[in-house]
Image (cartoon, rainbow, N blue to C red; front, top):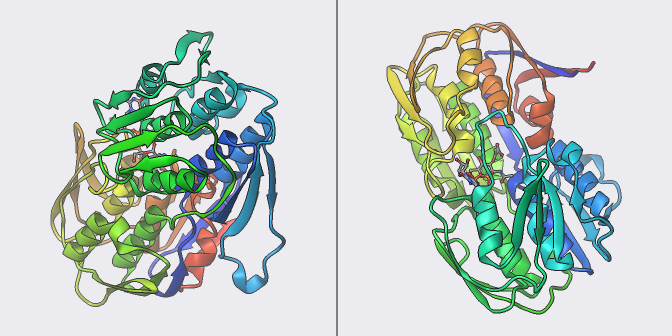
Length: 429
Ligand code: EPZ
């Protein structure tokens, strides 16, 4: 199993090109099931989760190809992929595949829309909490699906197709909103989705579905109206830049000091995080090419944050921000409101010398003068990258084990950080 070795202390200086967003790419790829024509996705990141989803979609009959090899200087440019679900050959998504990646459960809505039946394994346990799918099933039922659970599988049918309906989520859910959009796009009649997730990745899916012929209004706000159409067509769409990758590198620069241009980022996609980094002592400016993050001289200030659905502080940046706060002057409180158990990084940060106390949904972080390198590992990708951020500012050497978590969601992490001066290497095997 690969490991990453980091010798801390170097400031980060240079340019990092931000990749396409994992959490937009996955639902966009799944949307290819909705049409027999080809969906072309540009700016698709090279990630283990994308490869895993290719396997899952292949099992349902999706043909996948990517445009030819890139030149070396384009190593970080996104790939262009073509996905064609001419015919769906299997409506079952088996446990062996779904259990590896929770988002693959989202195939259920397009399979039902196209085929009128689906048998999809429940996703099972997850390192960041129980993460049920009750709200996704609620949407399917509201739109006319018959749903039963049998031996760990959700078995659903839509004998008369999906029927437009009003759905109000009792809680904001990204996957629930993706599911509602994909079910309502070809439903008979109009659907209204209330308390919808406003995450940019939801808007990106809706934009792509509209290019495929859907009639979706209001995506990006909390009320979305979808007028069902008879069929969807092929389209070409470019995957949104990854706001979480951008926020991660911005936090890394705030941690080490230095001056880095994050190319291709839209600041409005992560304003809350940029505000928190500014309060912590970073200088952030933006122009057409992206967002520039600097921190010179002054130390890191303690800042309190609480995670919230978009446009609030993203839960997917909570671990990284906590890593930064371990070196702040003073005490910060970091509250996690989205997932009930997303503090698995606390113990590992402590191994590097951090002082963190947990009180229910809040981590109380007392900044320390120095972190010290150690062997560490983490159980999910955001937690893993928080350890990388801590290691970049730690004295001596840190080995981050279980690197496959990082490969799920960060494209060319060592190359991107290495090119900005970080002492970081991957050890294979
Ligand atoms: C998406 O997960 C992201 N995953 C997550 O990214 C992200 O942390 C999360 O949204 C919140 O922003 C992808 O886009 C692939 P939710 P999702 O449904 O859709 C509860 C990462 O590191 N809930 O918005 O699964 C749920 O338990 C990750 O890239 C129910 O109770 O998240 C959670 O408390 C991991 N019942 C809350 O809602 C349901 O049926 C929000 O979850 C569904 C969700």
